[in-house]
Length: 313
Image: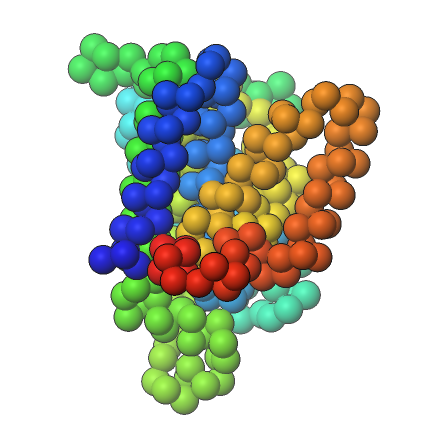
């Protein structure tokens, strides 16, 4: 039970605590962005931390979800929720079709191939201005359901929090399932996994599809929350930020992915007092974390304090 719901319970407690302690809409906005990017990081963690595969272009799937909720209602007359579902399906199908040949590669070749996929998606979004608005981006209609409109930071705080907690439950349940054990076997040794009868290609492809679905959902929520979307959402730097969240927080850790999202999303806001030295200080903090906590923040703390943290990570 702790393995399946421990991380989600901790996240739920943090969500409630932040809600009561937040003293401004700005704090709630930063927290909402943490929840959205944390969801994307949890998905990528399934691919990188559990299955041991690298993706440097994962923001492409974030962009597919974001532009689906923009293009669907504007060009096709779809309800935003249907547009989000369509974007998730498109990202999943693309990951399924492209994943098989890409995931046959390893190491640097795999990294470059996934980077190329992300760049390709970003180029399509940037160049097809007739559909996406090009570099200028496009407006996103507000989410409305049965006359109720999702508006205001406080509303989106709870929507993003609910998505994050549900995503954490799914990821934790996956880790505790036979599929999760198969993914970790693939991570440890593909040869040994094949000898044990595990269909390595199938499980790697499944992890790629699941991570793409998480990213597309996060992208759709981000676009609906901001009410505007630009090609930057699918850019290379966004991909690097998401995978950095996974590595900093701790690969293979659901909580670690969210902790990484806190560092990359909230910490820069806290460092604005350093003005032009903000990025330098952030870089030094990240370097210090990786030197002192080499396995990532959550797994390293779990190793230090044992028991409780290890069971819910």
